[in-house]
Image 1 (cartoon, one colour):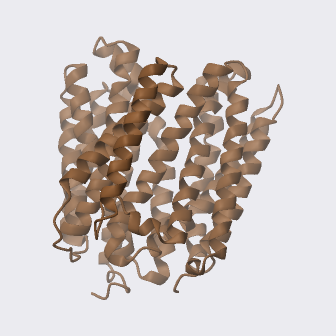
Image 2 (tube, one colour; image 1 turned 30 degrees about the horizontal axis):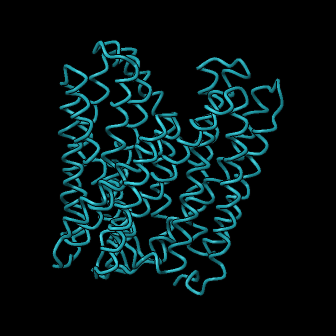
Length: 455
């Protein structure tokens, strides 16, 4: 198989179905767990505070293992890591469904997070092999579309299942889907050569410590934990991070791809991604408080009014993917993020008594901007890295997204702690600042000679 020509038809279609199913499971599971958390807490006789670990354990496991698994994929083949992650996710979903206590469920969610990381760490690297280079934007846009659709239907699926069955079925439904994806994936996912360089286990441990402590520190800052503990966590993060990065500088295929960060367009794409997802999370977390506490909307109304954002992405992302095969990602991303900035400013200045239409069309503008940015940005991140480092690029793509989301959620908590009454509006203003910064960083890619991609 010519690596630049992609998979032959119909194998290409079956392979992208497997990738889409895996991403759907990983994204849906996060959304479902969030919605079902109160029900799970009551059923397991757990406090609301302790039940949060059902969500946090999953996110933490994903974050600390993305880069190690991406690096492993470069060595032992992306197919093996993806199918292994999918198998682990499916098996641990059964474990979640059979859990009889909060501790058992939390442990199963940790394992499930590692499985999800296996899926997410190399999924875009696999897409790069599935599609020809000239159609890579279309392939990458499928991931963005699937994520958007899963985000839209996640709360609805959770509510629908809980209306007819108990919460364990939320996890049990993953099992038949996962088994079907595994069966198809065994036959259709591409076989790619790896390399024989030894795996750096010390770096994998340093990576886990760095990201794990960093997330705890940022979360502690946002939730007002004791300052000495937070300061100590940040110091530990800095020390471990320094050791981690210095170790990577001496590696020919580092776990943290510092060699890829030397490519200007790749580094700028990572910066764009972190800032944009930070802006998105600032908005997503603060908007329910604005709609319910400030405007008196119900939970159902809030969910309905927030739907236009991901709903528009479903239609814009495929178009943006096609455009990214023809036009520079720096330009498309800059325009999209500028539109997102306008939408966020419009939401922050909507006034004291807005109607449903006033909010909905502003949400749609945000979705239009974010959808126009995401696929071209992801395409450029992949295509600017050497093909044999696609796993590292894919891992950095996911890490940048999670870093931005974590920072955004922590900033919302910090803003709400300082200014509880005007917090949602301030958070939307800060989101607009991050979005504008991302637009500027995106446009900087146009000045790089490496921003011109081969057709």
